[in-house]
Image 1 (cartoon, rainbow, N blue to C red):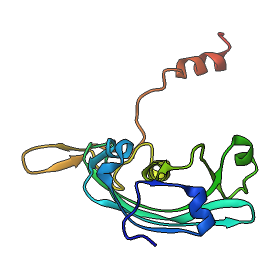
Image 2: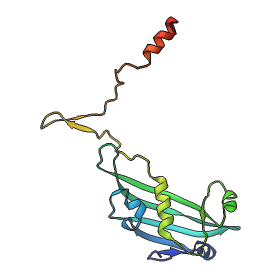
Image 3: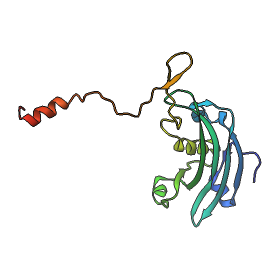
Image 4: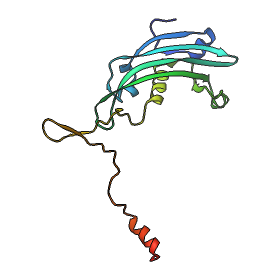
Amino acid sequence: MLDRLPEYIDPLHLADKRGELKGQIPLSSLDRLAAMLVNDSGSITVDLFFGREGRLAKIEGHIKAVLELECQNCLGAVSWPVDCNIKLGIVTSIDQADRLPEDYDPLIVEEGKIPLKNIIEDEILLTLPAFPKHQQPCFVKKIDNNTVDPIVNDEPSSIENPFSILAKLKNTGDL
């Protein structure tokens, strides 16, 4: 086990040795993810186990972090906990990926060493929502200087359907 995570890993070699990687990766080092964050301070806790199950080289593990994403309603920061399990089958071709057991996702390795942060970043990006938002209604408008009124309204709108005229014509037979 390593205290400091390596930048590049050889997944097949680690699987043969039954390697284990535990440590933290700074959020600021994950370029694609950092662009989506309000604040990229902090880190991701990584706990990965490499091994083989018959001929299948695999990575299993756990990723945990708390990210500050931008709420798509109010554009404020929303804390988003990430707590996901990883179960990857290491393959070298699409044909091998097609033969993986259903509970494994493919990790296609063309060359020997790959960046560890790419694996972690891909797994986190897959768990993030397309439109992150707060659990409670967060749109607000000021009525006066002291009170705040939520803009979100759960009542159905009373706007008339523009196609209601067609429905009336259909019922009367004038069409």
